[in-house]
Image 1: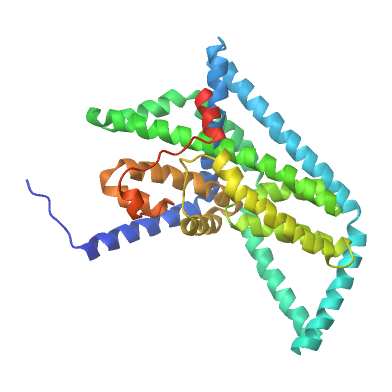
Image 2: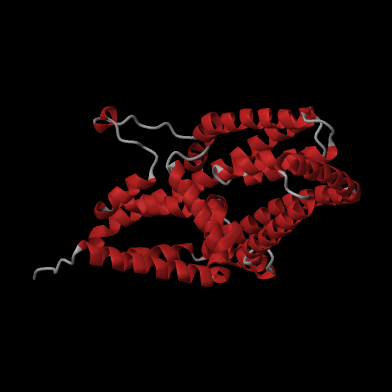
Length: 369
């Protein structure tokens, strides 16, 4: 029986329409899907610890419970430390506000003299920009971080994912025919290892970047150096965009708390050195080599994730696109899309034998566990 072949413009239209429907559903149901997606990533990350506890003779229920309690204690300790630093920051907020207003008045005067824009017009422009940014931040944070349900559902979902792990894996094996069992196993194993090693590497990278940021800011004498170092390290997890925010945030605090421009110049130089070290040494050494998305799609994916699911979407976009890339690389019809997402540019030297990539530190940790 011959299969009817449709013209390319019909296929492309159907695919585009399907993608629009998927994005529409993801956006409108972000309150449901965002906690599930975040819980799935965290369950993959915590799975090795659960396996270790089960191997030591602990029953599955208690192994999953102990794993979840340890994870909650670690996250709770981090949030407690950050909140204590923020409380110290808010105590000095009135003085910082006065100094900020002084600097703002100087900037208004400089712009009025050099660009012939009146102060009232500048204030109107700033007010409009702030109102738009509040709407943007509110939509980003309101969908996920401001809802108590997110923090309640995520631990429950993580527990259920870990507890019913074999049930979900069995479902994937039964959905596909027996001749594809080997390929399904390969995709599932590679996806699990890739996400685990990517998340472990990301956490190791954030820890090292936080230490480097703290050392640099303490040497420069920037106030609230530890708090800024932690925030900048967390923001730095967002590819390319995070590095810009990690530079601007300490500069803003330094501009309000310090006189002159020497500290700001020091921050720019220090961040340039840290970003260079991070991109050329830490990421290749620590983060998974299996998750390699090129710069163009990394930026586009992060922006699309932020538009769909806010802050959570920005952090989750890269891991889930990495899953898609692994699937694309294993399906013959989708291999061109996998290559398009990847960061390997074909050259004459790479047409022949490709050099095997060395495993990162995170991949070695995951393989050992």
